[in-house]
Image 1 (cartoon, helix red, strand yellow):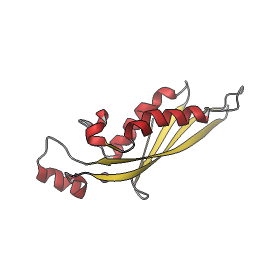
Image 2: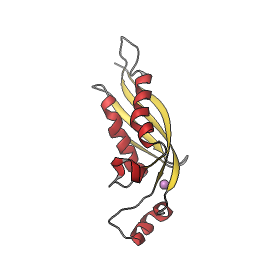
Image 3: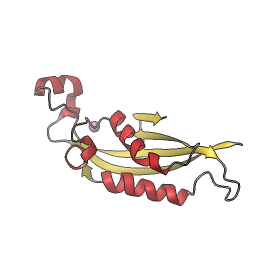
Image 4: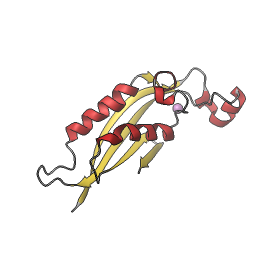
Length: 136
Ligand code: NI
């Protein structure tokens, strides 16, 4: 069977600060520079969520895009949009909210939507030029 990748774009705005609680201010500043600013800073995050799988012969779909859209909204947009990731999103209470860690958290949250044999890739843009990709 032919495997097809279907993708949906989404976005959220969020604030964060890169730092480790167990490091001194100097260590955090040395490693994370202005991203360690104690007063936080914001990003317009963009993401592309892709599901790859076989076309269901009954529907002609790999996945109903409305189901994907609704899942991204409930699991990512409603959970992260206009939030302070460090303070308001439980997954980052003890996890540095780097783009790398955020993309893995998003992947974990969306994974339950997959049907057997499907795979999931998440691309997260922190800025128009900086982006990370996670798939498994
Ligand atoms: Ni940042």
